[in-house]
Image (cartoon, rainbow, N blue to C red):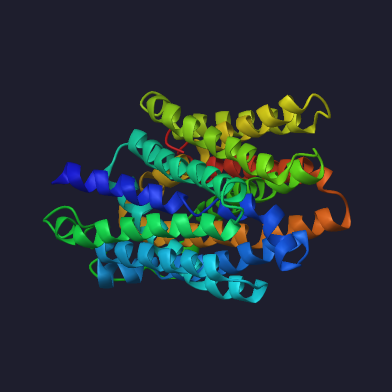
Length: 389
């Protein structure tokens, strides 16, 4: 039964990744059809992130009330409905409206599943499960490319992914009995007591770790959201080609996490995070090279490869550094910080590129990278657990 649950968790991670790259892939066409500025993609991303922030903060309470299985099923279903709403929307206001259930559905399940995996599985499974997320995120740009090129409709791309999500939610609902089997549901590790924010922020190193998560996730989502527009407006790609090549970033993330699972058997989280940030640096420097264009594409692939170990390693180290009894609460707040980064930075970068030039996108990403690296070293110093962080 435990193996069946592990397979279901892999399916859930795929479902989490499926919608994440749709907006960036569709936006070069979508913003023209709706008659809104390019930078408005950041506004939609901000609304989605706001919903995830709210549900992340309540993830510990929701998990204890509903259980991980039912919470996951409801959240995936909410995301499926929201994506269907995107597919039938014909105004920017409707996209904003459907962004609310999209964000609420994503936040709680993300925090719950990440905590469960951090508590019950080895480091390699954390990387491979996030690789599964990358599989979903890598597939969706090509779904959108097919919809744009063959069906001449961005809305069909959202509809296809919505149907996939609906099927996945049905599978999860049908598996609720498996989640309820003895030893499979995450146990109440705190005797029903919800850990308060004051207690969380009082833990040495916790705030620095959350800020690190903020800047890293801001880097990841900003790269994924604006790469298509960067290739279209600055590198003169067609929207269809840009949508396809945007998948290189997620391809890098997916391949990197598959490889990282094997590396995690031998190497510490601390080393893997440093290695990943170094690879991102090389990738961004390649993107800055004006010619040939293939270096730019290789750079975005390397950025994805470098991002691969950072997210799962930060999550995996949380129970060992801050305590298993507080991990659900801490990871919930960490996810809220992550989504705040996703909420604040993409629109900020969008408005910066509107005021300046989208050619500066790699420099904005590089500044987020430097903050992530500095905060990681600060966490190492404050927790004094360099062998696990």
